[in-house]
Image: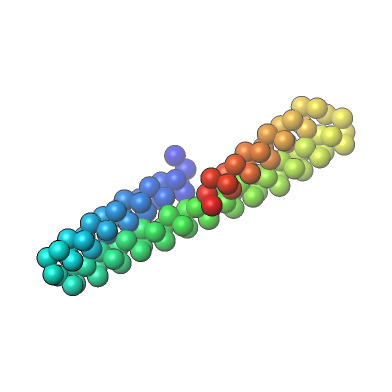
Length: 100
């Protein structure tokens, strides 16, 4: 699991915990608990978004590197380098798409 995936999972847990705390606070009429829960929920969502942004950046880099490798491979007649570049480009695009 990458650091971004770990942070995404931690963010989801924090969001869920915050939602529970917020709802319990609301049910008990405890405004302070409800506000703290909402804050944890928002913090968890922000952590998830930051992790997704990191993965989108990695995907963009992989895409560009793949395009360069594919282009060089094609230019020098190296089919293997061209194919590796295309694979890396597709991997990068997939990483970006999965983290929208």
